[in-house]
Image 1 (cartoon, rainbow, N blue to C red):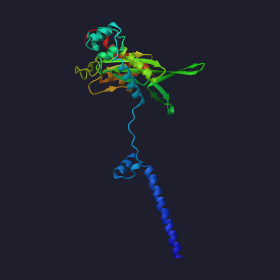
Image 2 (image 1 turned 180 degrees about the vertical axis):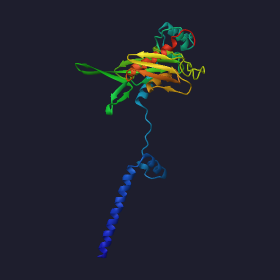
Image 3 (image 1 turned 90 degrees about the vertical axis):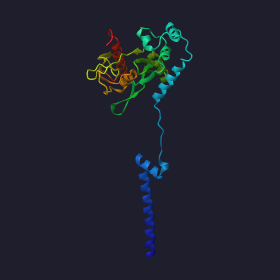
Image 4 (image 1 turned 180 degrees about the horizontal axis):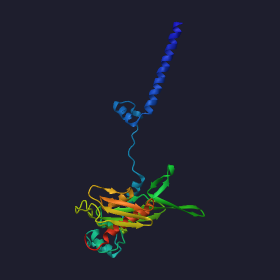
Length: 287
């Protein structure tokens, strides 16, 4: 009888040990990333930790690839317009001098030649329905039209270019492919560049710098109206992310913005901001 009791005791001990092992494996599988890092430092369960490398967003890859393709065209550029020939000959020193004389740019390579440090940013104008009735923003806007053979889709891209020193342009283009639409939008944005007047129009600051705008301005596109007010140093750009992209490429660091209308229509919002910036240079004389 004693022998049988010992065997039963041994069997129960093995079962308890197995249950404890199972509990430990479950706890390790449910462990938090911080706990897994600590385990890796101690040398425990290193095989269970997977470190993923940061992946670049698809939109950033597309804008970089499109900018590279557009930039390669400058090396084989042969001016076709009289203005392009004058730029190559060195008649204009920079883009601000060219715009101050009211010249019309018909070749995007002229802007690449005079502004080598030009940067590009995609304005997220598209969107797909999300969970709970929200919207997930996409770099391009997809539109569909019905045909006999089915739906036919087109993609629209909105790109803003600038050098952070007063030069900015906005362009929109449509194509059947993402990259083609972005490339065309970059070229259109370069044809629409303007020189934005900057200053310090805030009575609280009055430093005489170029961190803000010289006076209050207003822009309108469709139902969207945008008000931009000068601010003192340190306030920053008080606006949404898409408006910030435009103002940062202009070189404005401090500004207050107020919007009215259907601002969820990002194209009209960007056009209204661009219109407000363009009106800063329509005053007579210096400030």
